[in-house]
Length: 177
Image (cartoon, rainbow, N blue to C red; front, side, top):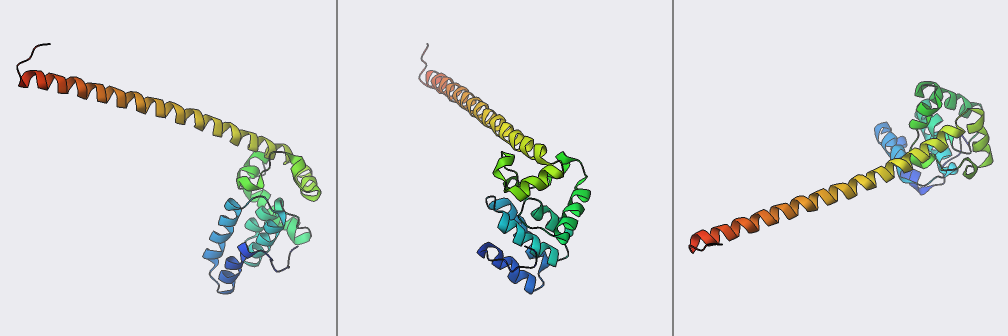
């Protein structure tokens, strides 16, 4: 909940930087948390608290959107985030790190699920997760094709070198093939 001291060790360095007024470092640490941890509504709630204390309504709203935080400050920050993200559900979801986008709306806690449905974001989050899986499959195919092309070029290079070597040996020893 807003105003509570985070109990997560991941947030300790961010809290220390905040106390030392190293706001750039705080912002970096919060971004690292957002992109490196698994979905944790309590952690996102605490990260939103730190962002709001720093005066970053957008960042706080982004963290709080999929957290278990509630209250007037939380709702105001979420509205600020939505407005600045463009208002369109796809654009809003695009501003969320992948760890905040679960594959099924049912995987969110009830309070988060209700909030996402009220804001019209539930389907956009699920679709964005499916799209990222599709992009992953496309990357895999491109990687396989690139590997096959590389091997074919390597085989062509080796065979050209072999033909050239045979030709040089024939010239050197006046041999005919």
